[in-house]
Image (cartoon, rainbow, N blue to C red):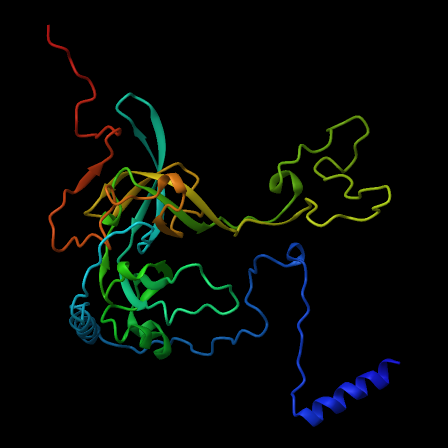
Amino acid sequence: MALPRLQFITHTMKNLSIAPVCVSQVRAMSRVKRRRSLPPFWWPKSTRTMYPEHITSQNEDFLLDVVEEKYSSPLKVDPWERGTFKERSMRCGLIARKIGIYPMWTKDGSRLLTTLLQVSDNHVIKYIPPEEHIVHGLKKRYRELGAVVVGADPIDPRMITKEYYNIFSETGVMPKKKMSKFLVTPNAKLARGTPLYASHFRPGDYVDIAGTTIDRGFQGVMKRWGFKGMPASHGVTKSHRRGGTIGSGGDKARVLPGQKMPGHMGRERRNLRGLKVWRVNTQHNVLWVNGPAVPGGVGSYVYIYDSLLPHRKHTEENHPPFPTFFQDEEDIEEELYDEQLHAFHLPSIQFAEK
């Protein structure tokens, strides 16, 4: 019965001049691999190899001077009109590197751990207006949002391909090693080449941080899920760190999806909500953020943006610099502290007068 039906469908499609449609298989998300440590098989392999060109030191210095002269003035276009903050406005975020964990003390003597994040040479690469920012495969957003592409950490133009270099040709900044896209409202748009500093956030603000956790590789159930393990004696042989039974028994008689078993641990994208900014160093562009749980190892990239928690959103009476803080135009102190944080240059003991 299936063959005549297939022949009928094929004959009908030929008469209607309709190309056959290929329907991909839909699988449950619990059975899809969440991360890949190797590129897929269809990813083209790199055929460009670097070889020594035997350039003299004088020619090397000349090339460096040409690069510095070409990218000395990043902002090629005229500054855009700066918008004003309104309710539900969304600003651009920053790309930072995690450089370590450091203890701080409040004025009442309480000790807290903070994570140091360095905003490494961020520039605006491109602004995408809402009418051009279309994400395929997603539902229509409840409001129109644009996007700002931000780049961090410059890279030598001689070390990249021409296709990647063309992305930065209209911006006028050095090609960037890391780029990311942040959703913004139209009143928070920024012109190409605008520098972004750590003063984009103020001490006392609450931010959300996204990053990738440390890759732990293939781990067992005790390290991956915190299982207790089996006894060390009393008849237990070669099963001290095993997970035990994985079956359900009864009428189910199968392994349920999502069962905690050994597997790949780490390298997951994680978002931390509502972390407080305790301190800002404007000279080295460093942020002191609350807690030691920022995802990733030392040197890894993280993405910082205004908190989306309802009780941490900004208001029109108290809002951060909008659309950003233009540090080249305004004077600012080198060290900024929160009101509750103890500054190290101040005395820690105060003697009362008799």
